[in-house]
Length: 319
Length: 285
Image (cartoon, rainbow over all chains, first blue to last red; front, side, top):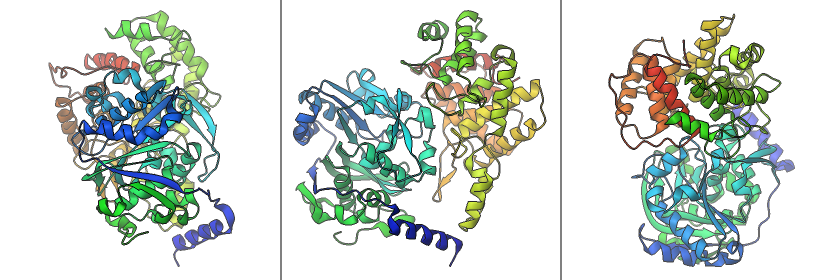
């Protein structure tokens, strides 16, 4: 037995004796729709997908949180601006009093330049007026409702805290530390770089999976719309390669949506650390426990290439 | 027209926001440095009063009022002349900086690594500076820490300062990307090389002023390539500062058209970069 084995075993024993506190969720829904390209058809597809959110959005402030990472518009690294614009239009049509696009990139400090390079200025009319850089927003210190990491409190931007509805719009990507980055990991972008730096390394030191689970406890319900039209496989979330999938995945429970995306990517969601932490019991997000609407997973699932360190995550059969 | 723009954006409390809203330390220090260099003493003095009032008991500065922890912006405040900031305030800022390192170079972390059976990487042996205490060191806060301490050490040498600066520079050399230049900190992740960024490359070259050798030469070549393709104000400002620090700013350089200066630090640092290219820098002596 190595020192690492001994310490890992001790930690596992602590968890088994009750340090881990499961979150029990009722059966949730995830909707899969075909969306073959970034074109005008998205406006109608997204309008139908968000139609169920009328009560949450009407007369209220909606914050749309895309995933902006790098200056490479030709790659599949950022949430596509046309999809974000389609979501803005759909929520305005539902009667939202205000629709704000907000993001706080983890690596690059010049957020607006990044958004410009990603095509947001050209695609979204008046983008600069409806965008908030979450890295530099006013902040409030928030007690974490349930703690998975050693963090007790975290500063969060007032724009997101004040929203009636947070719409998480991640890109469907593999991730070289967590296996997959989807709606829950997308919440790293609400942690303000102006307070914690670029990257938000405090979260890494507190444990990446644990920090993702912490943030989920602050925003347990949100509307999630995953950009899987062209995802990223291999060494994501930055250096991977494009993976055309032609899908959008939506729902109000991030756990159900992320587990469904993993299955579409042929990744075993029960082996993704932060999903296990949030659920407490992997049975919570078993395929039989997520009400799947729209297209069936089996019809659209295609394996995402995984770096060697994550080959064990491969979903070999239904899980 | 960067100076009128800065004057217009000053908040009633004397500080500056990044774009709009409450005052933060980083934009306020950059604006004060730019205004003071341009000869505006009234607005700069109001900014200095904001900065003085924001210093914490431990000698450092928080990112903005209400965030209860001193952090990397202390390096920026320490770039202010001691006679303007206040001698005692400046001494305490220098002491806070000297004592702050990334967690990966702490004894606690290294013992933990040893217990976990891990190797001590050469990347953890030279202490750099973190964004916030309790996390790892990164290229931007380390470069700014070196600039602040090196300036102070040349004006008023204190025992221990030179070795702290040398350690910070070793950190930068250890973190140089393959082929030259700097990413934000990690040169490899799970076996994959990280690519250099223009702004961090410029910043590190400024911090390595006076350091010569193949690593600097390689990174200067990367910086000159970045300069030709520059797309952002932050990148352009820091590439100009880094190349000026190394005496390698191309004669007659003209910036690509269409670069937007959107934040107070971008506007103010463009003034400081103009000064450095003309031979007058607030970042070094």
